[in-house]
Length: 363
Image (cartoon, rainbow, N blue to C red; front, side, top):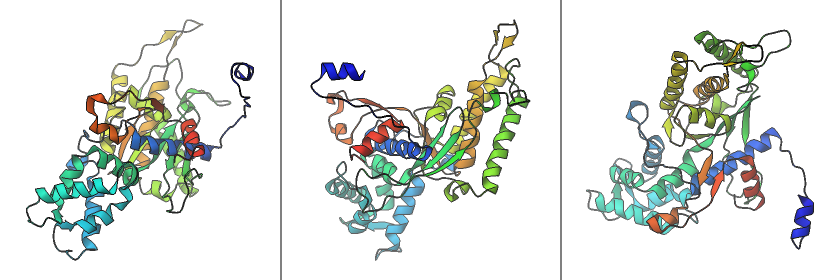
């Protein structure tokens, strides 16, 4: 490949082998996903309500309104002054969401309010204004809701926790991402250890006993990490906000038919469990092996159990998750173009993209 590039182009190319550490890989993945949340085609508008009819981002919006009210002169009312609103949501302002846009949305909410003060808006109108603007909601998701990633593979599973960037941190600098690694992957119950048969024998159809045994192994390994104080505090109490499932967690959701959509924790776990129940009711057929015995492929079921257990243990009851790997660029300025928007590139949420974004100073 190097010789071909050297001969076909007027510049020389040198290849450098780069193998990131586990923590660096997680940092690159989180950086890639955070960028894609803002510019990608994540649907933040059509989200089913969570437990107790909780709306997506409702907890965070209520917190913000309460904080703004507590610091204002109208602390006893359910209205917010314009200066309080702009101050409370100043972190949303950026190249993709200018201050004038935030100001215009507040004025729209003030117009819908019943108080008659053109510089004050009630919470209900502000809440509705956020809900009706994909630009505001995506900025809110990126800045306040996105909290990290859940990922898994054949040999391990990870919870990567988004850091809070300091205001003085320069673009392109390597961030410090807290990573929890569970030394179990979806191949664990399928492989034989020395002197022991696999937890899930390939010559046996899927059963509830097999699933329960795998769940017990995951619970035991999680407890070992807890006993060793190896579980970050934010995971121990349950991660809040929005998590993005990637790698094998994404494949588990795709297999369960619930990828590409924002779901509450309860809904996500329910959909994974429903697929497991379906597999138990109608176990996948085996295929004849070399010795004539039936051989069963349990990888999808193993992955479903692993994704379910990791999400159940790592997420707070109020948390949300979307499992997404491939993203189509959809910067918010395209909203004004409608059907005239140009065709834009697609991206995969991998550590390679994150490395590129950091190296080029885009994040």
